[in-house]
Amino acid sequence: MNGYETELYESHKLTGGLCTSWKRGEYIIDGCLHWLTSSPAADSFYKIWKELGAIQDRRIHNPEVFFRFTGIDGKTFVACSNADRLENHMKELSPGDAESIELLCRLIRKFATLKSPLDKAFELYNFFDLIKMMWSMRSFMKDFNFCSKTTIGEFASRFEDPFIREVFLLMIDSEEASLLVIIITLALFHNKAGGFPEGGLLEFSRAIKKRLVNLGGRIFYGEKVEKILVQHGRACGIKLANCKEITVDYVISCADLRETVYKLLDVRYIEPQHEELFRIAKLYKSSVQVSFGINMDFTREPGCVTQMFKLQEPVLIGNEKKKWLMVRNYSYDP
Image (tube, rainbow, N blue to C red; front, top):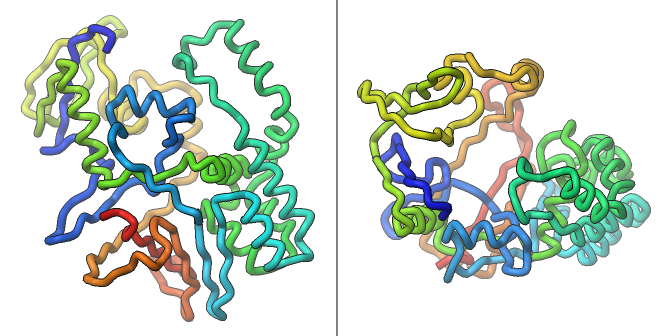
């Protein structure tokens, strides 16, 4: 888009990496995101997806429910996408928690009005841009500070109802994470800005690939990058697994931070804050996805909803007991 000659070196035979889906007989199995941030055309982030060619002519499915939790006794907590419906439902489940429920839903509605300034990349912001951004966020600062300094576990402890307290922790599955994570996520759903692109994520990836190729970009498949070449403190190329070296003007690594700094750059260019991050940050829990293509009509069941069922008996996986099973239903997508 900016006149650069662009080459993409992909180790797989397909583009997209983890952003993918695959066919098994008549069924498409999806293995990637559960919702797409800022999917409606009115959202400021939408123009980025549009520039990538990712969502043109693609229907976005916006679920009415974000999460559904069912206990052993059949008691069900429905995390409605709409904050007003969520507030009414939670008060029906636990009238005694009205004060905490009202605070939660007020925060969701408040952050649903926050507009992200996305006119340019953050690293291009100057002093006046920062002042303008801070001024536009002045009415959010008190709530922002509260949410940032309160963990999900701390807020969950406010609820008297043990069932709500338990399932609230499961929404993000991290007691130590900031409350802001849940608030911003639920604010997205309140705005219908957390939908799922119809057709699965392989088609999503292919659309971006098509956009790249149409702009003149070149893609090389089955080419695993082993090293980023450096001269005089500047990235100048890449070395492939077959020992071929390619000289370029700029290198953009799409690998994760650890792979990039520890392997591709041989730990020569790691920042102190990254060293600290790797030393103190906890690894995210592993997960296993098992997908079934079932010859039944599930359209009456809530589609694109993460449903959690509490098990009669916990399942031991490794040395960890799992009390809940997560199920997702993709029948909304033909």
